[in-house]
Length: 103
Image 1 (cartoon, rainbow, N blue to C red):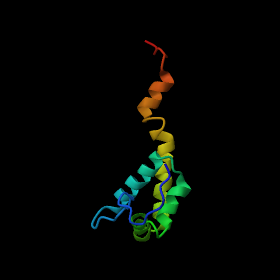
Image 2 (cartoon, rainbow, N blue to C red):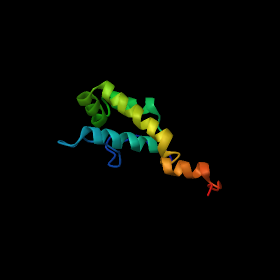
Image 3 (cartoon, rainbow, N blue to C red):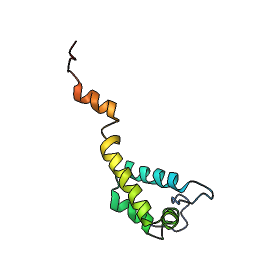
Image 4 (cartoon, rainbow, N blue to C red):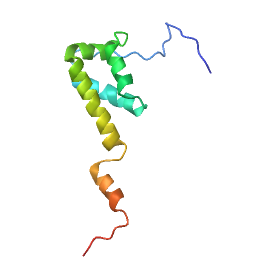
């Protein structure tokens, strides 16, 4: 089903900043949500750079481009290395599955 754009749509998602909130925690949560949806680094950075996305753009303005870029890169790396493959103990278990330890 295709729906025409309606600027008054009550179901439209809108992010808002929480005054007094932890901007780094907000940054992490937002990035993790978009990583879970399959977005990549460039797509996520667009959300922070564009003034049309108020909450993410405010984080970029308060923390600075380099801080946001570095954190997004860190979270993307964690996603690729750990969240997909599992934590180190799960990776070890996969690698050693069926291997009998020496007694």
